[in-house]
Length: 309
Image 1 (cartoon, rainbow, N blue to C red):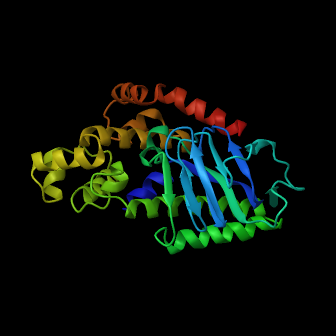
Image 2: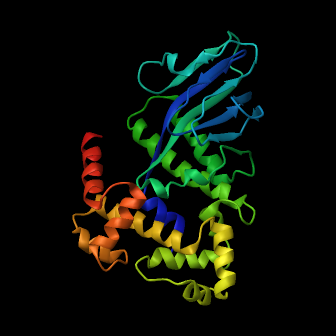
Image 3: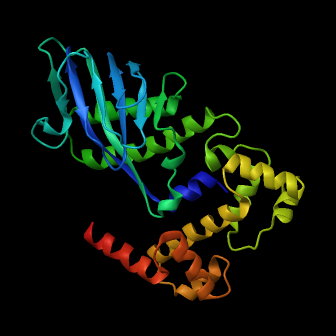
């Protein structure tokens, strides 16, 4: 089983391209705090990214950066230029298309900006494992990521039929490529379960848990299955994943249950059985502890949200 694909299949993830800029020096843009991850791709020129806390980040052509917490920040070519609020920019006719900003000189920088969203079940969010600021530079960002970004630049430059859908799909693929590129850069012990997928012992154990979350897995059984003793497996799992195996197993079951509650009409007792619980009462107690809602209330809330969106 592809563990990453399994998790992404059970969360809602996507994104939106917000702006395509042609920027003339000097320029400075202020981005407010947002409840989602923001990304910027500088396809031409140079820029500096400044957060409220932390060192300034110098960007050059080909650099791609993700502000995973949505923290407010500045992007500029000249520190002394007064920042212009991003949300006050006037767009051309239509939602997308090139926005020109900055000095009167010929554009010295080209940049696209957008967001990533991950939701439901919230505990399965992969963004929580990413660093606050993720910078991927060419060529280490990978050919796939580079190709998608260049296509997004060309797709967003001119308004064409189906543009919104094309860019939405490209942004979803971009998100997967960002995760792939980041995972390959991790050292042992980094990245929670995302990083642990590549471990020769814990990776196969994660696959077993995701393939059969309803099974009453024990440390001994999983350890034997991946060639480690109980104690060695327990310590390695906790170190690499960032939580004990039993806690991860419960979270995996709850994520699967949340997905089934939202996507099917199966009875709660049936869902409880499918994720490894003999009684609805035991399942409901754990589910409420995990999500703060009973299974029935969770299902109703999510469906109300769907109908309003």
